[in-house]
Image 1: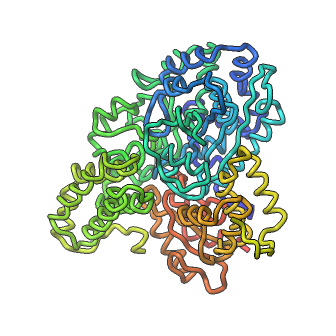
Image 2 (image 1 turned 180 degrees about the vertical axis):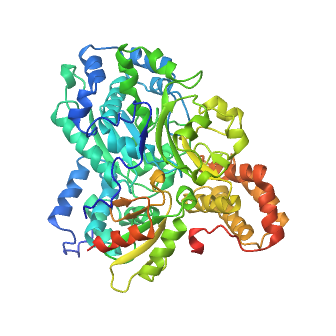
Image 3 (image 1 turned 45 degrees about the vertical axis):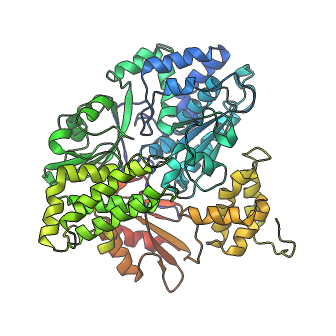
Length: 447
Length: 165
């Protein structure tokens, strides 16, 4: 079916800066022609034909202060420096396009609108880290972004930007897309590697870290889509070639550059906003048209469902950067800003999030496999008016016993919302328990 | 490993060539990396993965059948029982919930007269509840087969279903 009813590539796009999301005035920005016309592949060409030492690129990335955009916020330049470039044998770069953190929808737009930036960034990564093969792991549902990157890879190969002896440098690099098949856990980097090997997506123990023992046991570096796609622009530096200061100065101390924030939920204009790090939350909310229906802001989850919820008064004094959000009780995460208005039933929201972690736990570690089920069942009971005050203590007890006791961070991610919702909105849980009535805010299952 | 009694060809030449293309992405001794793609391609042709089909795919990839069963049962997009010609997957996670996915779900259930994980009598639609599909800015949303549909309303859903053959 080819219909205007299908979501268009432009549907959710709102741009302020233009590092990962292209300027809206550019026609068909996903084509090689458009990308080239706007500086695309210049960085790769200059690096390879000028034989720029890989250490210079790492220095630029370190100076630019770009931190990983997938959620953990680890400095990209530092991560790239961990790879044993000179070691014999195959090495890999892998892109984590398994976007699935509830509230996050930026990598989808990067792949649909700007796939060549991702390809150029991964190829530069391959050069810096001595890898000749890259894999882009895309979540299974992303058929359209997959096709978009497939087409771009084809164009890049035909134009000589992927393949053997790129720009006569003797450096070979090829890139392949890999389509997942539905599992949030594969966004965890070692689960992703297992999935890429054709196995169940179960996280691995760390150490060893992927830089030492990654895909097929070979040194591997995994970065988020947005991280890779930012690299060409950081090197171009708006004309000041390889000057990391340019990107750094777009942001604030400890948070360089611009970042895409997905603003969703109760706002007038949901969308992806690429803005300077350190922008006040209130400005971002204004860009998104403010809280919808003229209502008041109640709470915000600023970085995807796994980060702690913030009451309005806390987020309104925050800026969108790592330090500021941390000082005020939460985290940048993947930049997924979920807005909740004054009518939001926090118990119903937490029940839904807990269902998600229960559903997506891979089942490998007992505290997470069993604990997420406990959390969900207790929250469902409370939300339907059949809870007890003891349940609230049990919830916290279970959450605290999951946190820090699992191989990967999914267990922590299941515990943090429970802890933060109870910290800030305990009265709503108590009210439901006291009232003993069926909830008024409908979840889909109740429809 | 392979079943010597099986001679039936279960996939089209097109599907088999697609699997070969996926295999070419990986080192020759890492055929299992193409297992997920091969299962997807097989499912695209048959709508769901029967035990026989999973074994057939395992033979092509040259892995023990249990490896293929493990993978097929781990990932949510593989269908291990028959489904309708069109799979409707509705996101009910937080951003869609905040923007009224309950109305989308209610409308679909009423219109198709099925619940989640059920198929219409004519075999045309299967309805599924799914976790976040990463199109939160277009909430509420759903996926039908490969395509995403965003900013859904009951009226828009009616139009979408009318266009589906």
